[in-house]
Length: 210
Ligand code: AMP
Image 1 (spheres, rainbow, N blue to C red):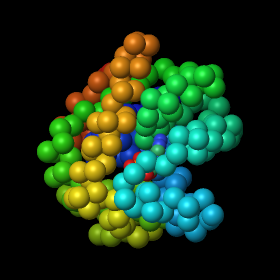
Image 2 (cartoon, rainbow, N blue to C red):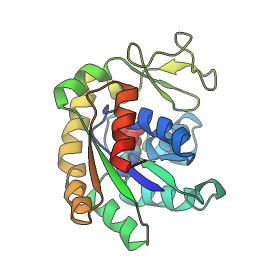
Image 3 (cartoon, rainbow, N blue to C red):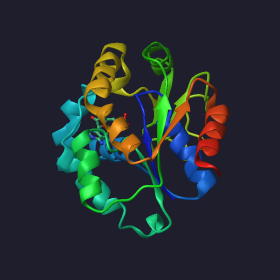
């Protein structure tokens, strides 16, 4: 199964992508996690994108397309994958289609801007593997430590309230146009994300008919 998760920052894409990945036994491809790993490792790519990423701006369409094209050739993607945070602009969606990518469903994770602003203040991510947590909604077993890999949980620099506001603006302007693109192709499945993690996962599985 090949899926796309679309939605505003903080709707729970990363968390649901991890849960779905375990449930469906297919990997998640998170362009945000791949880019943050490059920054953490201070690769030439990582150094080149740090400013844009920390400011909450998008990186170039060419760059993320290249990352995804390379990642899907890996063996673990043979039975499908979940794209988290990609595509994020209409040109990215068009390029994926032009390059021959096919998807079974595009899950639209819906949450109001107000609720996003509230949620983002409690979000923490593992600086090692990128897994997402929330201080109250999805707490780790040990405070500040990733359940999966033992890495340190940190607040993302682009999660401060002013940057979140800017990221929401970018989402409405740059990313929302892809909603009608996939609706026209009959792939769009809206999911209400107001519920807790388990409730939202069930809503997604229901929307997928699995
Ligand atoms: P995310 O973890 O999905 O919230 O992404 C964090 C940041 O990574 C974004 O604010 C962008 O700077 C960059 N990024 C991730 N995915 C994309 C994409 N598909 N297109 C452009 N920039 C992206």
